[in-house]
Structures are given as structure tokens and as C-alpha cells.
Amino acid sequence: MKAKPKKSDNWSKVSIHEILRKRCYSGNRFYNVRKTKDLGSRTLTKKFVKDESEWIQMSVPKIIDDNITSAVTEKLETKKHTRIDRHPSYLLAGLLKCGICDASYTYGGPGRDNKGKKACNNRSLRGDQLGRHVIEKLNKVIFSEENLEGTNRELIARLENQP
Image (cartoon, rainbow, N blue to C red):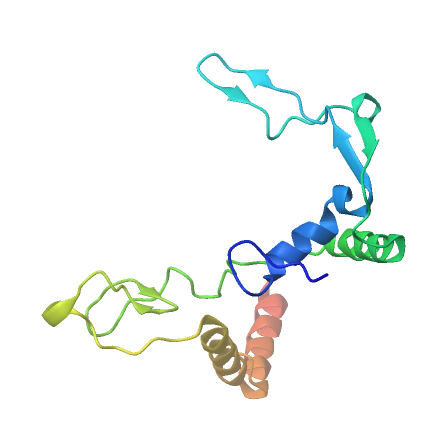
């Protein structure tokens, strides 16, 4: 028997993830899990989970084998603590201005608020590449051996002249 998703011909990653994650597919269905909180004008149930001792467990037909269930649970537990930064902060974020339209420069290019004839056609930059480029230039110019030797000489001269 081949199961087919409701809305499409193929299973999405999200659907598969949900099926593997939910306990009911491995033979256990729990009731009395959530508690409601009445906040006057509205009632919330989503975020309030009762203590596991209050849950009511009921056996249901297994769809997923125990080996698969334990492997998935183990994998999800190890991934739970890895954080994916979906909004990375870049070295020069908020500091750049477009040389053409003077708009704040995001890493997608100058501010794209102006459209049509007023739109800036300056190219966009990738934040990680720009940050690397700036660091390379800093290393060549400021942290060059020549510059560091001069800074060291100045520092030693100041220290020697202190009372």
C-alpha cells in the first residue's frame, strides 16, 4: 500500500519530518497533554503543556518501526542544540552608504526603496565576501610588518620617555 499526501503528488521534507517526529505514528497517542489558559478575551492552549504524569497514553496502530523511531529521536536530539544563524551579522552592517544614491547599503545592494527612474543601479555585494575583502586590506595596510615595526618603535619611544 502506497500512501499519498493530501495536497500534492510528492511528500515534502516538512511533512516527512513531522511524521517521523510525532509519537502517534510509532504506536503511542497521548491525550490530555495541553492545558488552556484563559486570558480574559482569549484562551491560549499551544504553549502550555501539562506534566507528563497527567498525560493519557493510548496504543494506536504502528506506522513507523521502533528502530526508525529511536534513530530519528536520537538524530533530532543531537540537532536540537545546533543553532543556525539565519540572520548573520556582517562586519560592516549599517556602516555603508551607496556612492551613487547615498542610500544605506545593505548586503543586497543600496536601499531598494526607489523604483523606476529613481532606482539606483549600483551592484549588490555579498556581506561575507565584502567582510573578507576588508579584513584582507586591513591586514595588508594596517597590520603589515612595516607598519607594525613603526608602531612598535613609537610605543617603545613613548615608554622610554615616561617618567
